[in-house]
Image (cartoon, rainbow, N blue to C red; front, top):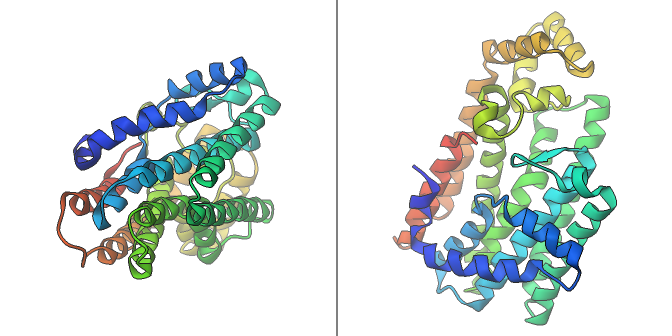
Length: 323
């Protein structure tokens, strides 16, 4: 299964979206336009606009407001990626040097701020106040999730409950917002909006679980990020949390010592083998499957359509993806 198949019901809308999105990225400032061209060369999968359009089409007819919603979330997503690279001091993004590594932190932060402002102004211009409420809530949650992760990383005090709070806020909040925004662009039905919001929440958690698995199973040439980057960065994710919980105290102490002290390659392979041998991979995969089943159940009673079929396929794609 691939995204080309999934986007078929909204292929025309996504092409039109690209033109609309590009228009919102440019200004009268030459430096900003140079940077916008650079970002557009790194085109991502457009998962979030896809969710907006499919959610809208599931419950109604795609309209001008749907394009505003898709543009808003993609501008917000782009801004958060730029800011994340500054916070994480990342040198690369999608195989390209990051903005902060080329133009510096100050320029990168300001570009991110510009994109965020453009999205908010778009909604204000068209009096789409519910969009502003949904995205503001997502930004609040994303910020809290990032700060909670920083707080726990300093103390290494993280269990499953805290982990799920972090990924729910950091990752699932925006995916949830995409689905709710898409639905809100076509209906005011609160029950429908609740279902799509929670469909996105469960899908987003499964998405992050799969991402955390790829850190232990992926290949740099496929995923686009270094193997075991979470381990190198001292991030404790569900595969490791589960393995630590089910190993001896002596082994868990050794692994935590490795995590805290800039692990070398041989140490990283030891941690990967440790996680696999104590069932961390299988457990995380099982939990991801459970979240995806919850997501699917939330849209099961909607009428059969191409949009519904694509949303269900997208759920399966989340679990199967290798990058």
